Length: 199
Image (cartoon, rainbow, N blue to C red; front, side, top):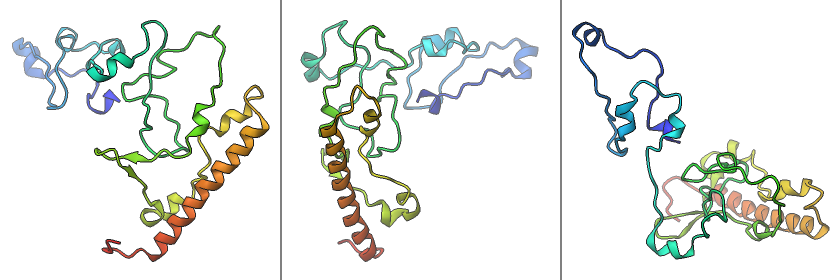
């Protein structure tokens, strides 16, 4: 996600006057939302190991620190609230760039299915006031909205024989039916929606 802000160019980027006159150029970030790091100044031209350099350091809120996992018991982390309500799009990285790929779990540890993901049917976006937003994609782009299946995101784990159970499949279909019921309500709202109508 840092590549969106920090453009990386491994090509030759010296000006002719710096070669002729011996000007030593100093790199700088023309971005008010990104902090300068001394490693950019030490290695302005070598970006092959840029993933090893931390541009930004994140610290958790003080009120959440007592509830953090003990050191050495967990690997990486993820966001509790989903970043967007899109079960079709796989999100591998959390907001800090961590994932099971950056910190792979121990392959000798057993995988335990607690089933907590099966309890969450909805993943609505939240406002800054912690209010849920239910977007009506049919009134915005009906072509893209028609491509969605609205199946619960945890359904693919039922393909694994160790996780499959009849009651899990029944729960999957029950949740899917509830989600399709909400989509029917959205379609009815989109039919009566008129531009500029506040209601």
